[in-house]
Image (cartoon, rainbow, N blue to C red; front, side, top):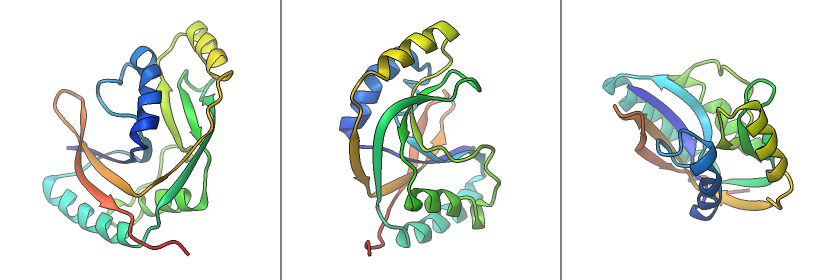
Length: 172
């Protein structure tokens, strides 16, 4: 089975992102707006039980994560994905790093760029037009996220929560 680990932002932020994703993201119906902490990986049912146990331990020792969004950006020229840029923080980077160790040992394929996808697989012209108009919007937003989620992919390609993990460590 395919799994991934993500953070879901608040419903308010998801609603804003979905107002664009409906039109610009072909994966709109497959997964809610999110910040990817660990990209897709394969695991058996037995392996995922061990992974979930490891994730419970990680969550118990991790603090809530404050996210700050200041602007829309793009991965162009690598690809025509438009996203809300989540400002990197030490806590976010540490959680990302620890989710690639232990039972989840792997080397990330790309550098960690925290973001929430707004549009992807756009033509060059559409990418340029949409990004240009989105950059003119006031997008300042801050919130604190208190949980991460282990998701798995269904046969129809959509993603659903396997287990949710509360970030339990108190802030200093």
